[in-house]
Length: 149
Length: 303
Image (cartoon, rainbow over all chains, first blue to last red; front, side, top):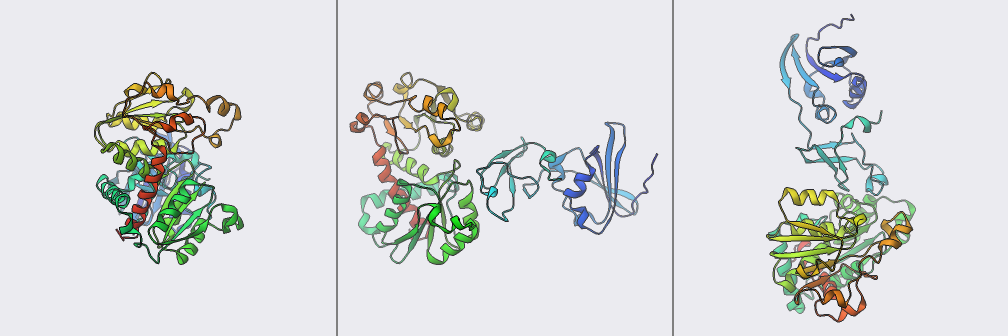
């Protein structure tokens, strides 16, 4: 079995659906940050058979994790200090998401206005419904299929 | 500084104040004839409109202000590919308030976020048409004396009709309103509306026949089946004359039922109904002007 060493300070995203770690890596824009990141694909999981894990060696406040809940609430976030888990963060849906999903309504102004950010606002937390800020087009599915990579 | 994007932007208390002002304008227009002296309204209409644009322009002129603008995208810099955000920043240099109609949904919101003048959504695609809703509410309040305790029938295209959706959303904030939706199967009110009514426990019925239900209504809101909303001409032809309100059907209605229509009307209301005192759709146009006058004054903080 492949072994990846523990990190001293940073955070670990565990229980990522197998095969989705690279998408999350991009979604969190980790490619633009100069930190050590371990991407572990298809690790063994008692619950799901296999899973992905991301280990990121940086202060958790440097990365906006809000969007993770939109993708999969089952992802766990373990905050590490001195090699120990010191906190487990609960994921909650962000009130607003910017440039993560795109409005698919061809009648929406976002389809023609250059440079306009695609903003979705959480309109129903219980049903996990987001609506386009501009045209109110409903979006209530998980973000995977809308990710641009 | 405030804008108007949706009828829900105003609380019911704010709407009451707006309607009181509109009623006062109706009563004594001379008092308001110079309230907007030196002010300019820009009407930026990226798609054709007769009633709404003229209503805005007439409203501003009646307040002593001036108007400028364009009435289709072809005669604006949009034809050269200019963005809405650039256009509004230019327009804001020439005017004090802007009414914008645009075929793309959310365009007035983009304008509002880039403008340092109040922006009024004068219709954005199939999304919102808040000043029509304000017009409808003022008409009901003025002629019925209240905005609560009635049964309203909405008839025709309830699927694509933005005026219908906005009016329902605005009316659910008032007490004891019952909705009767009358439409062909293909043009039923969208699920999100019925879901919202279910959640709020607001009573509604859905019917196909107008004759069967007209006797129970205090208000009847007729709508046009809009050709531009159909991809298939055959469907449009089949559905366009599904409802025709005529004298015979009006004879089944209550003596004090009011007939409203956002206009333009095509065949859905026979011209013979125009003479009926319960047909108030042309009065509605007049109320549209008063409410726009009140809105301009309110947004310019001149009320």
